[in-house]
Length: 416
Image (cartoon, rainbow, N blue to C red):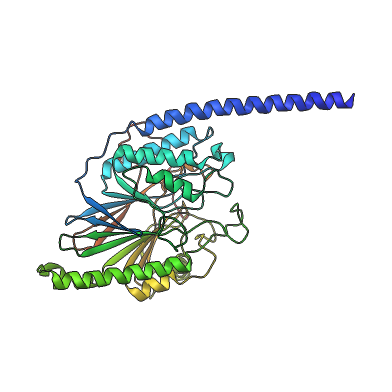
């Protein structure tokens, strides 16, 4: 008798499970098709053509004598499953609206494009979210690259960084590639802005900050990796190579505008993008707070606020000398990260700007789809001489006109 009851219960459970899987599969297929159509429905962005050259071994040259606009997007968090269909559509809409209005020459997506967390996305297929973003960017027709975050390739998601990179490489406007041999991670690259004299006016580095470590494979204890030693050595060699390149070009050039009037081009300035902040972000913020939210000898406030709770900055747990190397080489003047969605501050620490971008996320943080202060992008205008002006831009400004309805949100005060 007991066996019959057990079999009936088990059979009923299996029937419900099969029905659930079938229904959610149908919803996923329909929802994904709708969002793929949406990603392909946006109008292309008209920008002045630039020549981009793949030099190889992680080096790209962007040839230009005019001002260039670079946009940072971060933490887009496309779930790609049946539970995230509506929020994925909202994220696609936000990204398209900002790019269409700003018309950037180049976009850097600094991690967590995909978010295959089952209890929020309804799938473990991280290829789905990645493909949605790639198709959107190809439709918009804007050159872009990415550096991975901790959620792009979760330990339990279907695809690894190699698979997602191979997907991205199929899209003509995506410049992300595997790193040079012997360098840990994917997408460790440098994009050199080169003028008609062959002089590098500024370099843009993208660096893989990896994911969870120290046995915390699901990220429950917020134990994040740091930039590895061989990546820092690659950064050092690249900065030194760029300096030597400029020294030779300036000796050959008859154009004195870049040599006599702008001696900094002998050591071209650079910007670094990565997903997970390093420890100096927290060191700088803590010093600023300890001084009563006022500047110190080492720390100068630029803009923004910290909305994350203690410890405020969720940085890599290992010690590294990435920041120290930047100070030593005196090339990098700005670093931009993502990861902590409610932080949007920028502090100048010992001469280097350490900045967060506004995020896009509608999915990962509970209730974040209804909040708006943290949502947007960062825009960098790079002048022909390599100098750069930066601004954070909130999505809910009137200048960002959405092709589809823009949601109503509460504009909360961060840090309060």
